[in-house]
Length: 274
Length: 359
Image 1 (tube, chains in turn blue, yellow):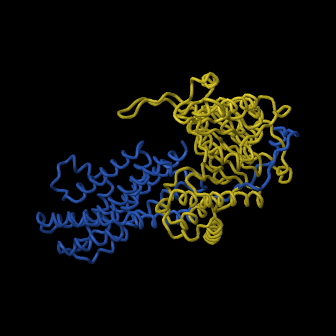
Image 2 (tube, rainbow over the protein chains, first blue to last red; image 1 turned 90 degrees about the vertical axis):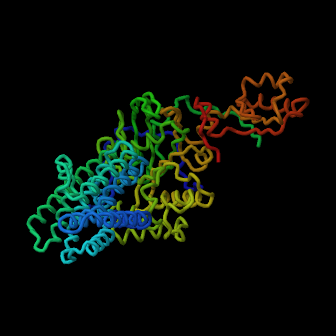
Image 3 (cartoon, one colour; image 1 turned 120 degrees about the vertical axis):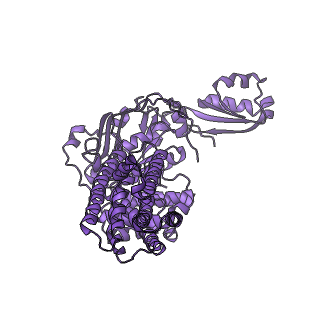
């Protein structure tokens, strides 16, 4: 129990003015952006390892199952490329958009954000660290789905290296969107719902071949950031991909990523101080 | 336990809030320069009314803090005591920069926290009631990450992590995820995270909930060490009156958003020193056919077979004489006579007493 005396001695009232003249005490250090981003990233990755492995299997098998189903309908060509690319990016959408929206929704609702908000860490470090960890966590699943799809539909494996750009950029766009949805949704159930809807949209609009969709749906497809990741990836299965268009698609992902992460950071700030 | 103590000559005038606002210089303070670590003036926060939604009833406007004024001095353990809903957590959220007050000022070590809420994170460490941000991490990684987010570099964070886990006896649990620990261990792990990356002010919201006595001792030993070595100040939120009496230097008692008293635990107890608490436990029911017992009924707080009375010492002696003899004694199962606790102070001050924990 308490052994240090801090007994109150009566008398000697201290005037408020006397205190006001004292200089404010030195503040503790501020956590800088990159080191704190790295710390959040590492912590989130370890969290994901503990808690999210079963969900990663679900994401991977879901995509593999969809490809097997579509194998009966599609025999190759542009449609096959779209299916493989769409299924691969779906893994990213499942984890980065859906799971991250749920995570931030729950963190906000349960008061868990207080922990970060009472540490001198830049909001961007928390959002980017978590988004980065969730996006990286999709790598194994996405690669497995892409390789399996290429083998299943007889597509060339030569340009699969493009995933090195597709996963982080589509990941940034979708994770930013997921984080923003999770932090803006007034209730955690709503965050979960929005995350699920976003993933369903990525599934339907990304996996199904574009030319069979009605105009309105095609427009919705153009609005979804995952579409550009899917298209960039699908184009590289061709014999002689048009790299300029691939780069253009990836640039859209990057742009959406920057914008959505900025919105998510703003939403975090807003959610942290109520 | 039966203690008879004459009321002291004069305790202090009946000025519940005023005693908080008039700061007295402590020995600690004069040694370390700044005397007041945290000054709160006129803090007011009202939660707006919420309209009913499906499944959620409407709640009226609630004034969670009403003109709260406090001064926490350097090196003391200052407590906020009150039942659930008294406004303790709302007050703490405003002190830690998590919530903006509607009105009033908060000054911590010379920094205006209402105007610069982001500075709070660089002055104080906060242990909230929720651990969801750390739950999936191992004890070790939770402490290290928290230290890094307090601005430590990797080496410092690891050194401090190891030292704090050792100090709190958590070294064996270091590789285990916090989620897998028992409630008390989880709380201790979060407390460890709060200690990594030294801060002059610790704000602890019910830190020892669910802890066993060993863990509690570890917490208070760690707090005392920091106090003795670095003059660390602690603001403690509690609804546990026993803990409040044993660890606090001063305590502010909150009820319905207002500070209804603020003094040392002993000073508060002096306010009701003229009273003794008598607990009577009846075997089956109170023998109301005994006129003396029937007369007491209106003054007793009944809870099941238990009657609790707050009486002047002479009255208490008479009551004990009555119930330990004759017909009343046959119906009596047990009785205790005790000097006032902080709970009695709370009740005497007009608090409703529901929700305070005695453990």
